[in-house]
Length: 398
Image (cartoon, rainbow, N blue to C red; front, side):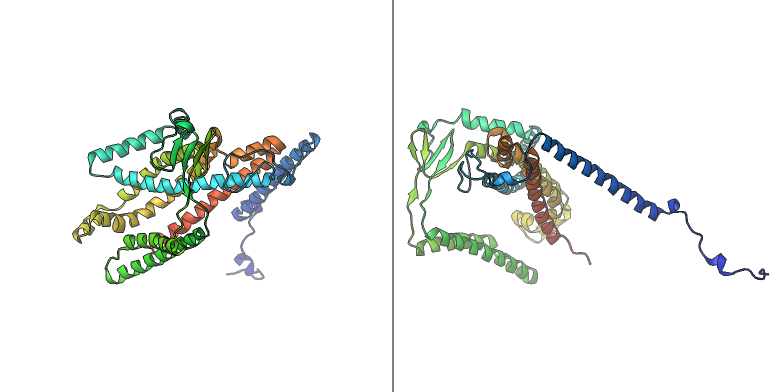
């Protein structure tokens, strides 16, 4: 029998858990402690660094960006001279890094896909050549490959006076590849608009052809029609604008060519080294992705009468992309980061320009911080785009 006068609610109340025996409370305490420790450490490092800089009379801040740079840059996508500011010089470096990374990624994906497919070829010779390529370029450090291609241009190619002239208007020398381009004309901007308009039309055409195929099963010759649009629209625009044919042909003047476009040995060596090195890894990624698709998919496609090219484009690669995209993203990021090795062969990328800026201004912290931010931005942008594409092609489960 219950005792008279005893509070029955006392047994129903949970006992208070000591603070250090509660995992949730301990976790909060540990996280706050860690934040406090890192905050104090960061405060100490920052204040100590600022004090040392002030004691040594070293300027801080980004005010140096508005000062005159006083150094030339060999290659630039925009107008630049030594009288421009450090900010413009750094912009030139960013654009130089961006162009070599963008072109390199495109060429790497194309070459790597081709080598990866060739590695799986039933032709023994083609398969062995692809395997040798992969082994050779993967096992040699990329920096040595850059030195090799750079030496090829300067040691084996002739001087401008003895330039190799394979076709009219094209010259190959140890100063780079020089070739003729159309002279400036108002029609060129309309041709560019026509080309980009064609790209939009091709995109819409591919979407329509895909929906049509899903509904009716009939294939549309997307490749041939797309090629006709991308070539036809600019040609028609060029003809309607008066068909300008004047060319800016390079001419030997003194020790080098003037006119046309000159692609420097440094840019070419850097691009070749990065593309050939990274494509070897991309080829293995493509090979693994293709092999991840069940062989039954190929047999089913063959039983429907599809040709080998159609099987690869319509059945194998769309499924393999889901395996290929994540490691392919890593290889794209590696190519972008490896472009910083350009300083070793004299190409004026962002690291090279920022290094010269640091040497002249003495503001190493700001220069290194900017290098980190720029490469972080390139990496995050590439990763975000590839993640978006990966989600777009992912299988939707019900």
